[in-house]
Image 1 (tube, rainbow, N blue to C red):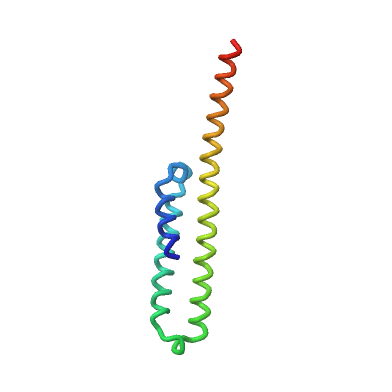
Image 2: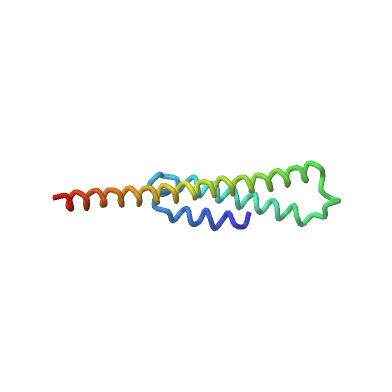
Length: 105
């Protein structure tokens, strides 16, 4: 979970994310992450034999959720990076076509 917060912070700096209007979603996700993290820290401070089965299940579910959240964020980062490289490749193709046209004349 600790590696997810910096990833979200980096996404907030991304121009594509800002243009797509995703900043609020990322801020909301970050806040939820802070809440989950605080709850898991509190649960970890209680001796295991004093936790109810419901507490253990709840902590496990949030732990699993945090892993899934990180997977989703990683996939999104890859997609954003892919779009950026697609844009860069498209620009390169456009310039190559222009240079080819100039050379043909």
